[in-house]
Figure 1 (tube, protein in one colour):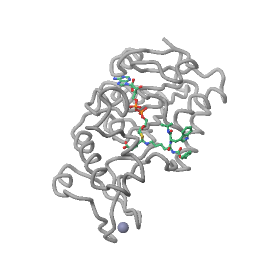
Figure 2: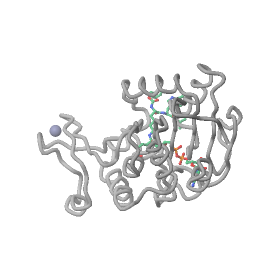
Figure 3: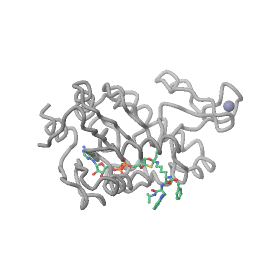
Figure 4: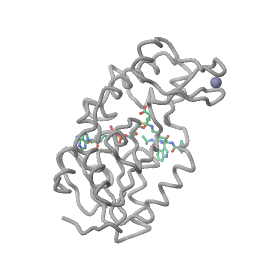
Length: 238
Ligand code: BJW
Ligand code: ZN
């Protein structure tokens, strides 16, 4: 389908649709809501300040799904082509660890990682396990200072880690082929990445994998409509 070799730099921007076939709900769309809550109202510092119990209930519900989930054929395809020697970097908005569990080595989490909790006072982190999820019923407290812990993720209105962001921009600026897969491409700054990459390198090839059209669809080289867990393995003939 496209020409690439071991010196071709391939970058993948993944979003919630990438993990949907693993049973992890997306944020937007008809099955994207949790009960009657809108993620844009829960994934915020003000929601946590107002009602940390509800916010933790939502995160624990998702943690339980994520800790029990397995990588799907889309995750496994990226890991496999990397093992075959391709230079692939994954810039994921997803807070799950399914890319890593599939075997991908070069994964950057732009919006944090749900497996980790972080103390709001001293920054101490701990990792969730299924056992801990069963033991801790209320809001988790820091082992170091006793303060409240929060999910170690990036909420609306919070800045992404500047080193992580710079690393992503550097990678985008040296990219030959960009895949944008399973994201609605509406959440900034990641929504801007395809435009930045194309401004930097007008000959970049951008392939979008999605069920539907998005705000970046009119600038991409090709849109591959369909479920990414089917279309991506096919793209690489896996
Ligand atoms: C399939 C499929 C299948 C399904 N196969 N496809 C500039 C302009 C306007 C606003 C802003 C701006 N700059 C910043 C903002 C504010 C805000 C923002 O972007 N708001 C927009 C909504 C308008 N951004 C921020 O606040 C960011 N911070 C920031 O920029 O700081 C500086 C600043 C602050 C304030 C003002 C200005 C500057 C932080 C954003 C953090 C996002 N956090 C979340 C939660 C993370 C923790 C958690 O998981 O709980 O990240 S929100 C949520 O959305 C999550 C996701 O990573 C993110 C993106 O969602 P994603 O992955 O695209 O999922 P969906 O559900 O939207 O889409 C799924 C897609 O898959 C769909 O297209 C389906 O069709 C498709 N699909 N199944 C293929 N099988
Ligand atoms: Zn602490």
